[in-house]
Length: 114
Length: 116
Image (cartoon, rainbow over all chains, first blue to last red; front, side, top):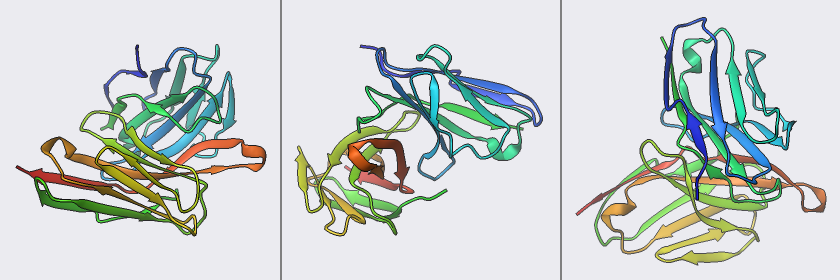
């Protein structure tokens, strides 16, 4: 079956621009997570959704970052006024329920801010 | 943000050798997980541990959940070239009533290189 997919796989943008990163979770998974992975580091939690609502957004670094999941499936991570420090791989994961330990990760979107 | 302390940072070994890596935390977790990440891919779950003191195997992989709930180790026996990759430990904290907070806290990773 299809796994978690993320688009685009690579995104190059200029400082100050707005970007959107998309995540398609595994069908039927109610929980969706966003993580950010900087070079040489492990993934760091950003936000997670249970259904349509953001149950925990404590990992978002500042108010330039925002994420939505309007219909409880696809999610979009939005970054305003991008900065060079936002360059990283943005990973999305989904799991069957919020209580499930098995989070299935997508391949990530590599964001480069010039 | 918080990350777990994972060591060693990298390992260079010969095919057939055993490998050991560990992870420590200043705070308690009640689930420990080990993931492997290949270049250009997301992390893939290898082993999950749910109980302090638990020792779990998955093929050539063995992992243990420390008694203090603040550490875990992963062993790989008889390494093969396809074991190459980055290994991450991750901790997860469950709330009252068994409800998971969901988010994973990761270590910095161990880069494994296997020479044929």
